[in-house]
Amino acid sequence: MAISKTNLDPNQVAEKKTETSGRKLKIGIIGTGWIADAHMESYLNMPDVEVVAGADLVPGKAEAFFKKYGVEARCYNSDVEMIANEKDLDGVSICTYNCQHAPCAIHALEAGINVMLEKPFTVTLDEAVEVMKAEKKSGKILTIGFQPRLDPNMQQIKKIVESGELGKVYYIQTGGGRRRGIPTPFGTTFIEKDTAGIGALGDIGCYSLDMVLNAVGYPKPLTVSGYKSAHFGKNPKTFTESGRPAEYANIFGVDDFAAAFVRLEGDIILDFRIAWAMNINTPGDTIILGTEGGLRIPSTDCWNGSVGGEMTIYKNVAGLETETKLPILHDSRDLFDKKIRSFLDSIIDPSKGPTVPSGQIIYNQAIIDGIAKSHELGREIEVVIPEI
Ligand SMILES: NC(=O)c1ccc[n+]([C@@H]2O[C@H](COP(=O)([O-])OP(=O)(O)OC[C@H]3O[C@@H](n4cnc5c(N)ncnc54)[C@H](O)[C@@H]3O)[C@@H](O)[C@H]2O)c1
Image (cartoon, rainbow, N blue to C red; front, top):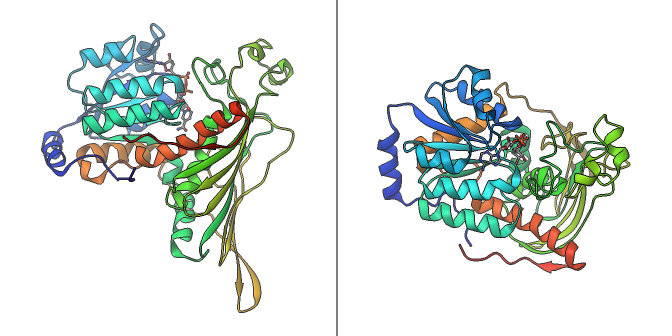
């Protein structure tokens, strides 16, 4: 499958461009929980948008959400109800827990609505394939919510690799994690099998995968040997020590740690590890090794996809072993504002294509899915991505 910037054909692009010009874009929000706030705040910062509708499965939650912002929006009890009633939405932000990413994205795309889908793409590879089929059929924009992509330090990593300073990249180590950081901000949607589907592996693992895969041009994963565990999530002490109920350990149905050895197309090896909880400060920095140079990217405490400090490039220059520290780059613009703006811009001008296209993130999802499958089987697996 070729990675394309957009699935739209030129005729559809021209048609959409005239349709949206000169009026405010109408947006709906599906799932009005924790991350929906960040979406809403960014939409409120955009002059050419009105959030006209919202939906949440919890009765009254969408109403309370919009009341908090003083926004008069029509409220519904599910994505299905909202999409059936709202006929002129230009786009939706899908801010549901992981297990509802695929069904909501498919409903929206089938109704001809552009989609900003929160990360991780989906829970399984099969779901991601179904979403991409709906995307292709609809000709609409689908972008996945990886805002760290828009961080200038992240973009610098890609620029360094693309500059050729590292030579041919052959080995990547990535991932990281938290000593104690199983997310239970407003309940248990991140740790229940039926809502989250995957744990640290998908939640923060998808960020560290995106950081390096994007830098090296998203090569296709070929094989995966993966492992995952839940030693901390299944232990009541983990929760009581952080002031959470001990019963969360019984509810915990996902992973809190994962590791993998992945072969990528182009003769690149990816060594990956990620943790919501572990008995060490960090399992190591991200490193990218090439034939001409190496890049070290310091890990962060929380691993939310950002760069944890000054990066270092290691090279041999005329027989000397050199180390160059790279300054941290700052950008005053909020990452969520940039993420939402880029979604809106791609609705207005679909020829721009989505900022974070599904054609790339399917490989991210294939690795996550491969780790889960390899763990279940107790052996290395071959990655097979169906034709879309
Ligand atoms: N990009 C980021 O920085 C970032 C940060 C946090 C969370 N996230 C992602 O955002 C997603 C949501 O996280 P959260 O913390 O807001 O979760 P949450 O549990 O607080 O909120 C999710 C909401 O979606 C609602 N919902 C589920 N299915 C629905 C449906 N079919 N129709 C309408 N409403 C539905 C739930 O009732 C719930 O209120 C997760 O996938 C998470 O990985 C992204």
